[in-house]
Length: 515
Figure 1 (tube, rainbow, N blue to C red):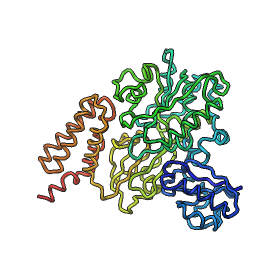
Figure 2 (figure 1 turned 180 degrees about the horizontal axis):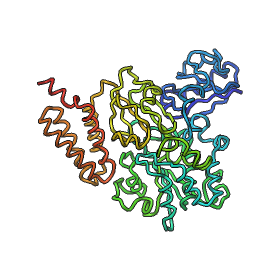
Figure 3 (figure 1 turned 120 degrees about the vertical axis):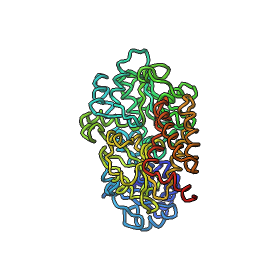
Figure 4 (figure 1 turned 30 degrees about the vertical axis):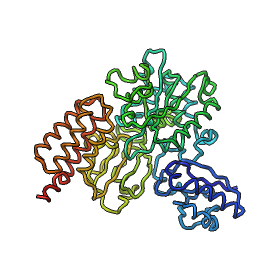
């Protein structure tokens, strides 16, 4: 029997992966061949979806992108034996995109059936949890600190220090919350992990619970990810049935369970305190700090809040040791990051590698430049509130401090590419418009400042006292940066000011031409 792998990831199914899987079954039967179809996550090479892989004695041979009506011809030409034909890619692991990665968060994604406990364990799953449960909780926290793992949600705060704060807090109840409200433009790594390897997140949250003394965890997932929600629910049922969650995790005597909660589509709930408010059944609005969630989080109890990529980095840390993880990366940016290439890009997808690779290499080498073939003009990293970097400033290493020195931020690792047809004044306006739309409304600088920002940019572009209005815009950006309660209003000036700095002609050219 031949094993054929077809992704069930929502990006792949949106372009016909389900129909391709069915076509393979039908074509194989017609050819008298017996096949086993395994539905996996995506390998992350989204320009090749649907990607079909066939298990052979030479390894997994890929074909893609495959349309349903391609399948009969592929099977007739020997696809089930890995024969060369149109769309033949060779061994998937030998493709430069796959070969050059260092996959920790994505180590199983695209390889296994994401809801098969057997597949999970056979590929190293639970090794980190078993090692954690065999040690005192304080040693687990120390291992995470030693690894140098920093939060992948944007601020880059050391995860181990956050865990240590929660662990040392005196409380009758503690929680672990996974922030999976992945709302930044150009980001989809959380979805790919949740759809392709959900058990890794469950294992990570259980490790966190054991380390800090929590017995209950919550996954807060954005409503726009229904396939991820269904996959996580299936994984939760399987984990409970296997004793990986529940009153006696892996026979250790430690009790821990996880609940899935789906948000209602508010971008602001990606901010940790707004998420906690939503989990408590309230309107998602930012809390003032202090107190910090590590001391007074969900229902006023000490709470670990990490995002998906931060958490799924933990099982490899515990399995292989903190030092092995710290050996990857540069300076204070240790381990790997899952970079997401999107926008006007020839080869979009997820690429996991150690910190330090240059932004130019990701965009030009692995991303292949723009999809249109036109020159890259700008790249935005870190979501809709990230800085715009011009094409001549992309030779910057991907580490937190290097980006901060350049006035930019890595954020969740989303990289959005624009070619030379982009209007950067419109992009600056969009940042203010986005903030006005998504603000929770609690603080005046964000709630009112973003609305005024849209108006001022419109006046500048229209040629209405551009110098005076530029001064107003700069004052407004300074006020929003310094006076906003959270990063929603505090970071909105980043794309605006970077667009003004690097692309000033886009703000003045129209009325100059009209004059």
